[in-house]
Image 1 (spheres, helix red, strand yellow):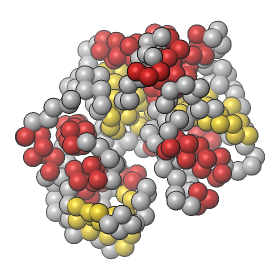
Image 2: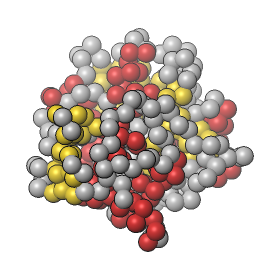
Image 3: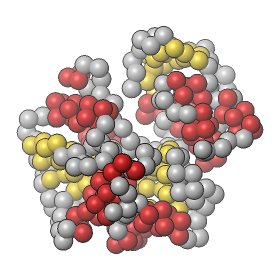
Image 4: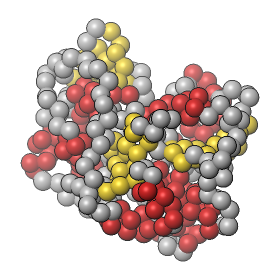
Length: 318
């Protein structure tokens, strides 16, 4: 079980939800009116006067810690680490009534002197060393200095870093984003030559797992485009009213030749709902195929089962 100290819990309790979203998940924050805010994922969740209330579920609270536990479904240690880990990257100036801020520049964690822990972590999850080396060489992956997290970087078409997702290697339940991340430019590996097909995944590790399976099958793992959605995509309750994930919108704009999309989202309820929504909302000019993992919850589960690293019944839910 993950351990967090009383000091970490006390620090996490001090951060209100509006401050947390402004600094660490600005893409999730939407101004409703005046000083009242809501979130993109939950229209009925309102934030004002240092408090928040999710009216459709009749739950509320004051702190970001309450939100991560009650709305996101995290355990107390997971929520504390989420807040404490983000604050360690870029501590915000806490305020009772923080003013809206301008879009922030991406603040990448400092690089460690080597990538040994990240390489060992990904290799332990079955990712082929060729893919790891490619990502390190192209700046898509490195190990952070302070926490030894795996940092997956996304770029715009000019090669400028715009996004970074963090994955714990020592505390493997930790997941987060670097301050200033723009979800429109998530982690991706473009095709080596122009390709009309795009493969879509929930996470960078799922993307690398699929590419590993392609490599092991003797196929070129850079023959087609691959894109991570930077986490779980949550459609609206009325599927037809959903908008496409930001990363997908930008990628289709940057690569207009794409006309076929393969969905490799998770085999759980959120993954299946997301796949249905994307299929529903995408214009009919695109050919969309749903190809979830054949076994396990996600593509990394399927890779580990295929390699014999885990039995299906023992797959770790990370």
